Picture 1 (cartoon, helix red, strand yellow):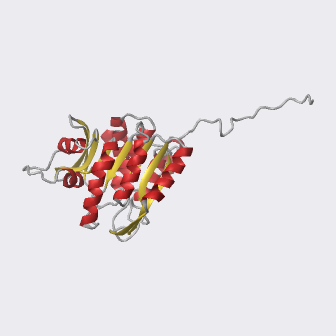
Picture 2 (cartoon, one colour; picture 1 turned 120 degrees about the horizontal axis):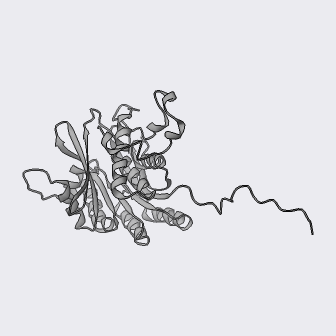
Picture 3 (cartoon, one colour; picture 1 turned 45 degrees about the vertical axis):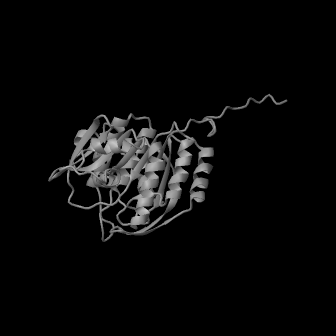
Length: 309
């Protein structure tokens, strides 16, 4: 037997190390323009220090001006992607974007049912580019299958009103709490309503439950038209919740992050502008920004009261 002592490893093995980033599973379509879809999820969640398990549900055919078409994967392909990753890695949150078909919504709802303790952030984009029959089938399936699994529903005020309150006949548009009440009929406890017209030069976002409005942020309108803002906001919110933030703080930080993404936005093509979700990684004056202060989202860096747009 050798008398030579064994030297302990200087660092723990990868197998023994605690995971440094929370895992978030995202169901969304590929967006070749880079404006929204999985492109938005990956960059926004990476900015919020989350590891993304990206389940591709299909692909858009689009540019920065408009969506021309969409090709969904079948539900078995979506299920196999998700189940394989979930057997290997625990997740702290799910995000559901546009998944292309009622069958895919059914498959994702079945997966969420097996992980009832995991919060689900569901984002409903504007679907006006799509066929009317397809829209109706998709919205009906989402209301019946996905919303009962949803923790926070995110969407633009006009999009959510057309979907959840189609028969509203009031003199004024439904206030955010009415939208939250309509979502609660399907089992949603919290709704983040964006783009509420507060005044000519202002838009508001409201985090609401059926009982009350929990948080409000007001912004000045941007002159530019953006693609991908909703996916960016819902992705950041999901990642921050996965990092353990309470809902109101996560909402405040996600809204301020989106505001700064839009403020730094750019126009890569001939169409709409795109949020710069990695604005923190570069600066006009590199000497004024410490490297350690640019690589994560932090409450101190993105206070709600600095939201301008």
